[in-house]
Length: 69
Image (cartoon, rainbow, N blue to C red; front, side, top):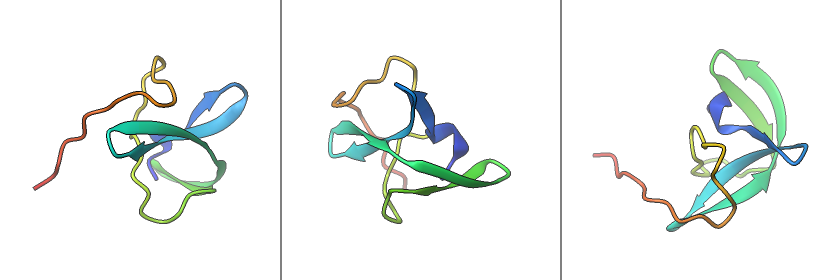
């Protein structure tokens, strides 16, 4: 996953998982880094996450996603 997706909130490493029109804060355990990518434990493969969550993003916030063609 992009290393930029992992943020520190309340002393924990978290990512924001896209769940329909909302995001859900999910704790993860960061692993080894490969350039701009980082392995994590705690998420299934293929989970959609916010690539660079802004500091003001909170659990349950509504988001718009851009569909890629």
